[in-house]
Amino acid sequence: MNDAEPPVNDLASTVPLMTLSLLDWIALIILIVGGLNWGLVGLLNLDLIGAALGNGTAASRLAQLLIGLAGLYGIAFALKLGGRRR
Image (spheres, rainbow, N blue to C red):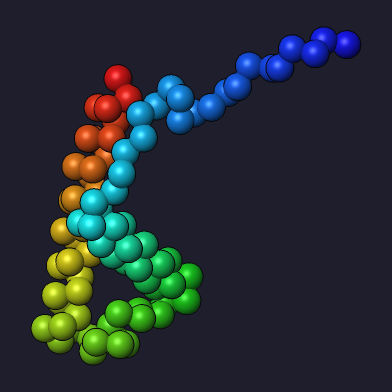
């Protein structure tokens, strides 16, 4: 038997950890809500955002706009994250 400890395969030791800012968290939460809503639309034809805020109302359109902006932010975040690993 070999008493030597096996090498540690710790991802944190090879990839620098990145903390998420408040804006990162807000965008992530909005993306999750939007993704779940679109999943419900595709699966059950149920639009929770439209049902909660009214279909076609200014509030519903604002929510959709925020989800779209969060998606654009998510693209920029993913590119930034990918650039840090190189």
